[in-house]
Image 1 (cartoon, rainbow, N blue to C red):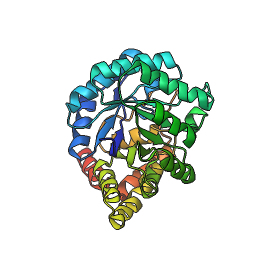
Image 2 (tube, rainbow, N blue to C red):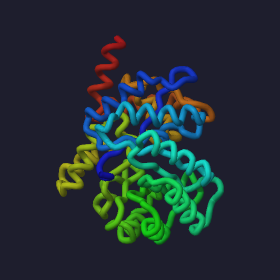
Image 3 (cartoon, rainbow, N blue to C red):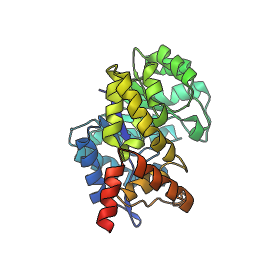
Length: 302
């Protein structure tokens, strides 16, 4: 169930409100394009900038709109164990298929603290968990040995791994790969991660090139490495471009250029700089998986 291409879903805004019509169109389009699941309320969804009511509304809306067509993994993790438990309970009540729990940020817990945090959530709520390791944002790295302990003590069905280290990812696969899925948290490393035993990706790129990312992952999982490598090379410049500035600033700008939703981000994030906007337009225009949509959008504008 938890393998393939899952979309780290952006949250469209109109002014200071969630743009629910745009979110509905985006959910339908992504599913039609062949993704395997949706992950609302993560970093890409600007969850730190959502109110508690908005977080719950986005989670409920995506679950309702998906209507069982694909699994929905709701981001519930915070740097407070009690708040994470409360949000995970809500996600379960709303009908989420799993909860994504990021390693607590800013607190910088020890490895023992990471274990106790996830186990406390698991003990309090009967819901599969996806643990998210992103040391560049949290300031703490989930060690493979710690991941092994988590899988033994909690219903961890997947680990979203964004350490950027293929050595660590190989160690992680050896530690937990037979008992839970290792999912790439870095689009540009998806193919290498699958090559060492990963089972898919939670993808930013899939917001704007879902069919291509889904095809890459399917080909790699099926052993068609020639096809997977060709798609990797075609998507690689886009994957890098979507991190020209802090995620999700570039991907929301790209979504606006492609006519998917407004590119509005909330403070403390700022809009994409003019120089990087020009670079992003060029990448979208030269990527075979976004160029047709961009050309259609520019044609409509003309």
